[in-house]
Length: 209
Image 1 (cartoon, rainbow, N blue to C red):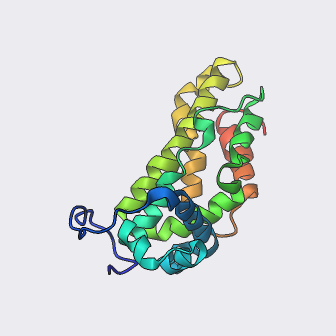
Image 2: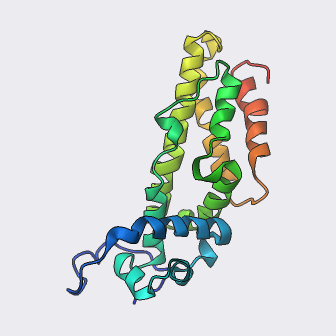
């Protein structure tokens, strides 16, 4: 059995001994329980034993599907998909309230739970390229694109002065980038994002908060 904290190399595919086919019908529940446990425990304290206990699955069954803790966590993060705003931009008629609608999205339980979930992954992501990549592609990059789409739309509506147009791409990165920098600080919650919008993003665009 592979150590629960070991980085999976991906080379194990095809080396598993023949046996009863794995039943994937419970995967969604297992991945959801994994996200809950990560939000509560953080990556370091998270174990496959805990997931097995909460789902009633045998540890050996979990290890057949996800040989390491990292494999399971990567699969769980990937399973959440992009934030819903990536497909359905908020449209309140005002830039600030559009930005706050993204901040206050119920996705993954709202801003406080999202930070609770991803701050537990921060340290592990710094040493695991696989985890860093799935967080970047599933969460960070989609959020940058959502914020940039909101800013471009606001520019087109005359809510942002045209002389700030060259700054939009950079400003769109502010909230995701600052959130990533503060992931290890468990005091960060919604109020932090409100300050980012009012004290950094809007002033950078020449808009009073």
